[in-house]
Amino acid sequence: MISFDEAYKIVMDSLFMTGTEAVWYEDSFGRILAEDVLSDMDMPPFDKSTVDGFACRSSDLGHPLELIETIPAGCLPQKIIGENQCAAIMTGAMMPEGADCVIMVEDTEELSTGMISFTSTYVKTNIAYKGEDICEGDVVLKAFREVKPQDIAVMAATGHTSALVGRKPRVAIISSGNEIVEPNIKPGLSQIRNSNSGQLAAQVKRAGASATCYGIAPDDEEETYILVRKSIEENDIVLITGGVSMGKFDFVPSVLERAGVKLLFTRVAIQPGKPTTFGIHEKARIFGLPGNPVSSFVVFELLVRPYISGMMGFEWKPPVRYLPLADRFIRRTADRMMWMPVKVTDDNRVLPVEYHGSAHISAFPDADGIISIPVGIKTLQEGQMVEVRII
Image (cartoon, rainbow, N blue to C red; front, top):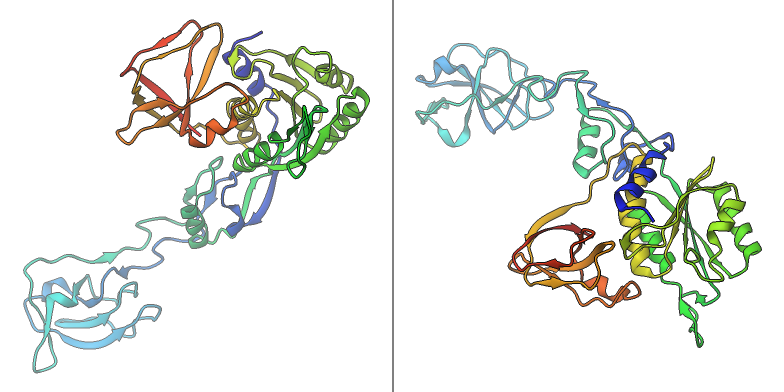
């Protein structure tokens, strides 16, 4: 049995990249950029007005101004602003030659002669100058970032309509055990529904990868072997839940070795999640996850999710909050790192949720996050600051 830190290092040291693909920029949301995005033009592309008003020369503001034209947004100015002249201009419109400021409509009045008079004492240019935001060739988005909605706008504004992104890893999900039936089936005596596959598929998608469920492998070594071989051939990652403990029918590790997988560890000193297996194949990486749904959920978040992101060139870091415990917490043993589900109260304190162990999946919908308790620590004191990993 190895420590969590050792397991994490082994997993991340085995990282391989999935390659890249080009997608339409609007479809790149949530994907990982594989190259820098450069602007194909200056932004703004010309000096433009930032308000509705009158473009003029600041040296003429003490005099009535002759209105010589109106410049709508999207139209080119037709005249040059001369002494004591101005042009009505709309927000975003191109500045006319000769003008060095725009006076806001609300700071002016129209005289009986039709001239425009400046009525304020404060003068602001109200001009966005060519290239003041971005120059042609500037890097506007750096590679290896997750694309956000605001990034889509930047791509559109800079003409980057084809985005090169990391290819989504293909992830196979296999549940194992004769006691498992699919969710649409009423379990018989000694049977339980397959809650792992759907949960893991959702976690895979949230991590930015593609999930394929390969069904339930029975407690038959040959059938499990065939399913494992097929999933390895067709995917980058294989997740197998169950069959990795020490029971008579827990033969997943031996099946993996038979399929050409080199096992790098089979036990991790975490609770829940002790019987976690990890191995490498020339075509894929294989995670043997515990059969209990809480364990598989936690191990995925701790080991699989950062691995998926890394395959696309992105270093994923979980969102965390540092908050005080609302009450004292004591555990019976401290030989493993414990991950405990918690809720954040309205006054921003941390309270453990009612939790009966690794099969108690109904505890997690009410949890805001999980906290870790290191090996050797049995007691956490009220008010002690803890790191809440948001889930």
